[in-house]
Length: 185
Image (cartoon, rainbow, N blue to C red; front, side):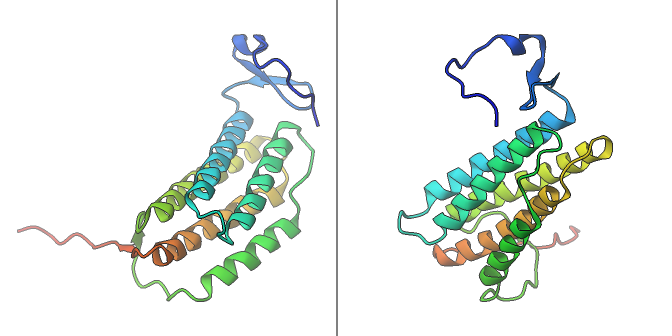
């Protein structure tokens, strides 16, 4: 899957293009690069979330697996028609999501990002995940993409929402409930 970089700068991108894994070149602002960038940013935020967790935390392993899947998704996007994310990745995420959601009380209000530091980082990752999904939808309007990758990112935003709820409670914080603005007199 591509060559290893021994030299970080190549100057080949100075013209506003970047190389794909299949050897092709596209503009750095092409929808494919927007999607790759959002997936990369999401992966970085998952790394930040992992860094917030204690070393012995059981969540580190599934979050690390998610990071690997996101890296694979980025690779898939950089090599058009290459497939690494499969429906079973989506199913595994759904199982994890259901396990995490089961002990949580049903939502009766909207919640705001926050509750604890790790929950806030998780909410930020969720917001970037939604952007990544929008970027994938935009890319798919004119390009073929692996639909399982888009499903994975959709499910991941749900997982991150539930994880943020769980972390807010676990870390001794509380979910921050949205209060509907009262009309002023």
